[in-house]
Length: 67
Image (tube, rainbow, N blue to C red; front, side):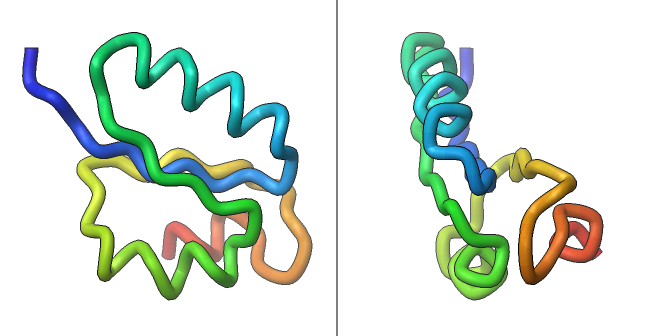
């Protein structure tokens, strides 16, 4: 199995903790952000294989983040 880098974005720290643990247990690397604005700045630098984001977040929602 190929080790992937996931970037998780959610304003709920417990959700990030849950998903991070599951992905790490599966052997992957994980970077997280509780702010979509911060994620928008970091994602190009981190260059993850996959971005998983909550849709309903303050300031910038997950759909706009994806665009």
